[in-house]
Image 1: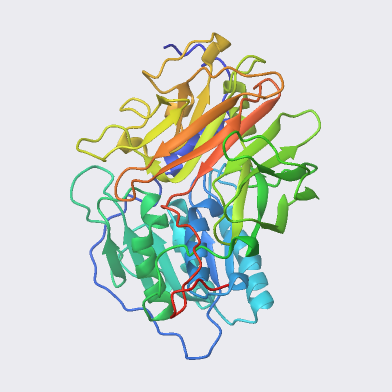
Image 2 (image 1 turned 180 degrees about the vertical axis):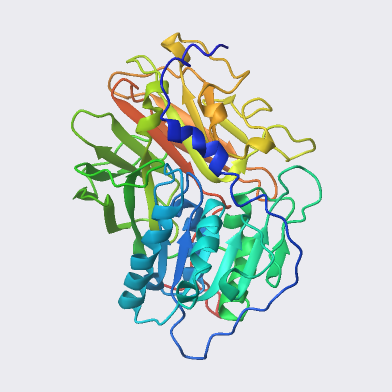
Length: 467
């Protein structure tokens, strides 16, 4: 492999992805713990706001939001604050929190909010809470695997959740005076999206254990989906685009009939909510004049999901070699892919028509890979999985694979994208997608960070299935 593409110009701020992903992770401190406050019986729960990290979005809170609603927490009291992580400082993100929190308070009638932040988002929040007037608006704060400090930020009751250490040695990160919990075997994003850490967060914010730490399947005909079509990593909407949602055949990815939902996208890129069948597969298509058509294929939506994201990465487009002869497929999961571990079940598998692309070179544990970009480098019809491609290998959370997948002019062929999740979990899921030509189309597959359960009807006392 060579870097023949190094002459192509990366946006300078994109290089900061690697640098800023480390912000707020290196300050060391020593400390104690604090218990979360209990909610008053019968009172409406305090609204919560999630603040993502570098290159992040609502995706890092998507599964936890569904776990909260699985426990009866109102969907209308869960919010995500998204900002442009291409910015070299946090000034704009901090300033934008003021009107956002005021809007949440006004919308919910609440006097205060709870805030949960991840990675760079914790740096944003430590700065924000350093102002007493701002700290007074926050009831509880959850610090996911980011900044440490010698005191609770702004004096706010704090839960600090830590994943694996960043140098492989003993983890000494801590927020003094906070409740600190550790999951040393979970990676940086995995610890945020894990059901185990959710249990800690739920108890801290509500004062009681959750009834479930899983995403509970709902009756298939009652599931709703909402979200945004947005640009990565700016988090700005794909304004002027058109969204169409099709039900597709599970075995081929080919469309079934007319769109089940259509929407012209405004400045925010927001869409929904719309109804889906929780056991069926769907394709979300975003088109905009003069640009490649985006084809997004999620796993079935077994539970209401109001933070779904369809992403486009225009900054990466110059490095996604295109031609009418091959298909490009990006696969994303909010649980890091690992390919260099030892022992049974310690590594993930991600195959494309049987070819596994997860190996020690493509997805070493230390890279914390969340997105795997598959393309035919130089459009030469040759596959080479021996090394991660430039520039993906120098960008936080990304990797690139030279993976030739033949395209059909009418996308009548099939690419079977199969994930075998490492233990614990360990389940296998397959999403079949059409082989769209990369010259005019981009394909993305989104796998869940948890082992999804299927809806089953409950049995009554006589052993009969209920309605």
